[in-house]
Image (cartoon, rainbow, N blue to C red; front, side, top):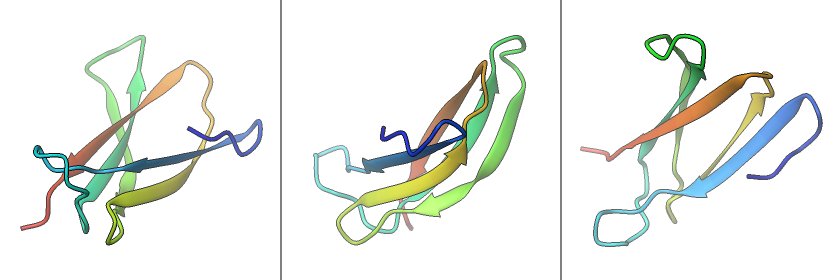
Length: 75
């Protein structure tokens, strides 16, 4: 994770297949988790991986919260 400034985060990563190959066009869903109520999930949005499997997204820094990223392979 790269920190862009105090109020924002810039997350980058690569989505891989189970065999270790980079996965293009994968949907990466971003969620915010609530430590006080684990059943509460806020869906922030979706980004997609590029042809080499990489993605990047800018997000607000929210004290006391964690982000969860889920990757889904294209059909």
